[in-house]
Image (cartoon, rainbow, N blue to C red; front, side):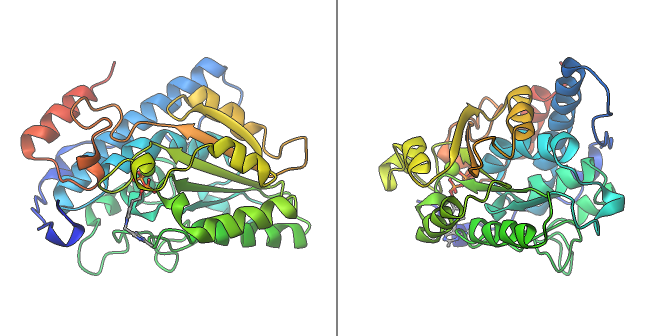
Length: 305
Ligand SMILES: Cc1ncc(C[n+]2csc(CCOP(=O)(O)OP(=O)(O)O)c2C)c(N)n1
Ligand SMILES: [Mg+2]
């Protein structure tokens, strides 16, 4: 079995420059629900195109878990979160933490799509001394709230962040994305217990439920089911949805905080590697680097509809 240490970077720095990147920015106010979904779908398509080129150029990345989470990230940053590049210092703005920090390239590309990073900076991903490290660092990127990468830390930080908002008397919400394999870390369950007991209604935990972790299925490693029942027992209002459905995601995020006064948990059913035919649901693509032919095929599958 291939381990992380066995991977020798196959760097192809010309790759990233060959693919154009248009910054679509936030969904404009006052548009129809259909226009919201169309804007987010186009942004997600462009983010995936850039992401695959970045992973090819850097010779490293976690493309499977990036492609499973991109629709969630794009919906949050371009539509649902009360957060804009010009007002990062605004105390009442929403907060976001990518606990599954290995999907960093997806976060950076989404930040660029939303105007939080200059798009030119994307070509520095994983380069020596670059700010765009393999895992996000809050000391290097203004829009990054917490440094993540070691699994099991982002959700506990998000609980603290939400508590701080309550103490500040702020209406801000904190969104955190955890991987399903990541949920095997015990620290998450301490954090979930705290959030439920204290009814941290401004917290929204999104589980990227792609059913795969590194090298194996979650169910074959340390199963999470019945996950929704567990989260309910910990005091959460639980929503199950398709994590690639921008409309369903936008509606779920709009309903945070839940009227019940509980924290929200969204189990976002996703497909690792979505929507690429040869990557989808294949555990090998957790951190495999595509060959030039595979990049070409993926880009052709990601042509405009
Ligand atoms: C504490 C810790 N242990 C191991 C790793 C190595 N690692 C990186 S990603 C990953 C699998 C994570 O699976 P999951 O949370 O399901 O992520 P996704 O499927 O969304 O990529 C592992 C074991 C790590 N980053 N941190
Ligand atoms: Mg997973």
